[in-house]
Image (cartoon, rainbow, N blue to C red; front, top):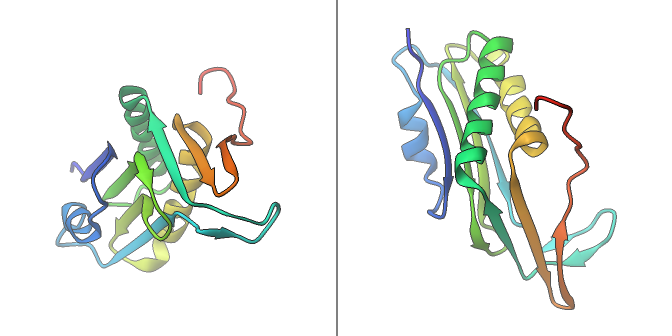
Length: 152
């Protein structure tokens, strides 16, 4: 059986209902969804305000890496039915969803929560998306902590 898969870099708003409908089968009984948002105020590490974020990506490479993440999810959690991995790019203001990872399965106790968590963690590691943070007192590119190994 072929399970539904959506991987997308987009400037459009993330429509949870449409995405969830696209990855839900008649056998689906559970969906685990993670959505990242733009924070207007960061309180940990270096507390500061954010006016907006600018996301950029090289779309063909980013979507290929998203498919790799989905393949890794399927290898680790074969019970996962549908997968949606969507990243917004462009200028995004506080309280705006920036990324969505959704996994569906027949039951909630089959690893679907872990699969969605793995999806966002892995996206942050290997999907080439760049983020510039614009603050009231300036701007800076936000660097990730991950350094890819050969073949990633």
